[in-house]
Length: 383
Image 1 (cartoon, helix red, strand yellow):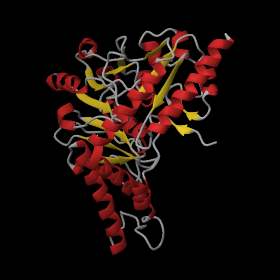
Image 2 (tube, helix red, strand yellow):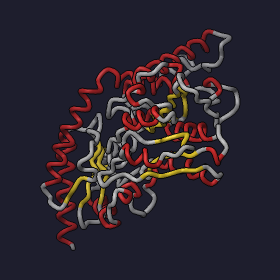
Image 3 (cartoon, helix red, strand yellow):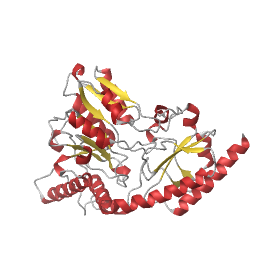
Image 4 (cartoon, one colour):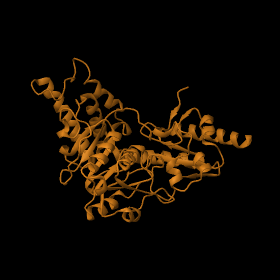
């Protein structure tokens, strides 16, 4: 039986409207040409499609289209942002502030820079999983060049106060980067409200295709971003490589769909999540990780006290859920995000991430409640 999908935080299915638009850019009869081929009409058409997509993504962020740099996804965008800023400075003249609950696509590049002699401070969240402005301010030194804080945590869905952190960075003339991979389609995102210098997104988190994303780079900034991929000088020299027309049309169409109906979709998902939580709450000895902090409509990270999360997942095999980030799902270690929030190893191992999205239905939620009720009851009886 095909599992009911409750892992939208890991990836979203491609919207049929997006898939249709992409399919028209693949075959000989379609818009397949190289967007960099400016010597003939087919190349011009492909370039036009790419620029239309750039405009759609810019509109989604409240940006200028000239500030959108195409990448393969948020992992590449994060690497370009972090390394691209740091490499403007000698290692002993550059300090980076980030958090202990970032995605590995931030933590690993920062640790890589540390190995090269760059300074870094990893700020911990509070017990609700929230990164406070005060904790970021306390970590800043006179050599801090970059602050990088995710807008929405990928495991808990907790929404960080990035607008306030952006104001702090602006006052101190520090570059500010936001990993917004989990934010797009879940909360309003505006680069001016957040006062960001750089912002990363991935199409597959908002019903676009995998393998494509973007980095917003503020034009009204002194930043000279150091390229990480060389060979052709595409994307104004910041990211070389032949542009994949079909992928970019995909991310553009996904952005356009969000531009049309974000608010209504978010409200519907929030109601479904509340119905799901009320059903799980009836089981007793369950709690929400991140409770007390603002959380997106689609994230629900639940601790089933005293139960093994892996065993519980096996008990609800008709549901596609996870115990945390898809990028760390192969490890048996407890979630480093939950540990950073102060959770015990036992509670972290007892926690599951359930995430809802565009195609979740009331019937799906009721089936999930029934499955969890049977699985939890069975595991408790067996103890």
